[in-house]
Length: 68
Image (tube, rainbow, N blue to C red):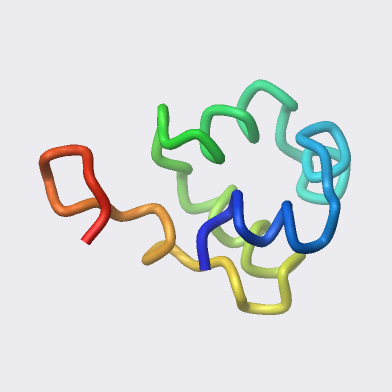
């Protein structure tokens, strides 16, 4: 599951997700938008907070910027 999908489904703002994961709000925004790929620490935090629903696969694209 993508971070944006999880956050929308659970009505979480970037600030709320940042507080839950220990990331900055700006980092969460960049990860959610696909601007930056999260580092391992952030990936683990997203996975923990989402009970395993948000994983590294949710941040992957097919190489041209599009999904699958």
